[in-house]
Image (cartoon, rainbow, N blue to C red; front, side):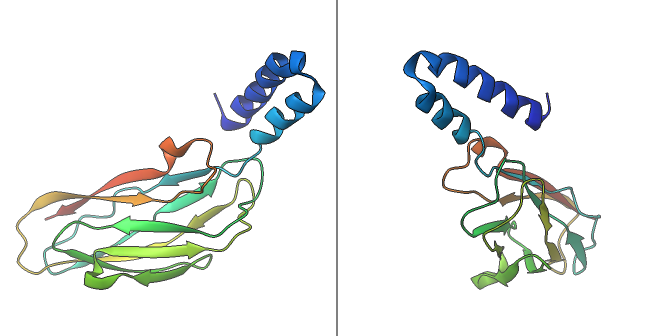
Length: 159
């Protein structure tokens, strides 16, 4: 079921349940389903040789019914032996100490349905043996109604 249909179904069910409590309660319930809702996705980057680099393009999308009211940060956590730097036209990105986390802060006002994509250059340490490493991407809002989709795992294949 699409998020839009799910949101409409939740509003209808909530209104039906609260109707006995009065119209004000039903309105409050329906308004609660219109919150901003972040969804995070990160596809695996291209395979990389030890000592080389590749690009990761994590995306965070506001799948909710209203714009984000506060800034939020998209964090890219990299495994040992891997460091990163990031940039994004819709965010301010910085690399945290030791280079294993890239943080991209998105200002308030991300519209419903709008995505923000970061570009994170991943550099793998020289001499790494071929293996598959895992990293993750996460972002969240204080009132996010579905926090289960606020993170995504990706794999870095060292060849």
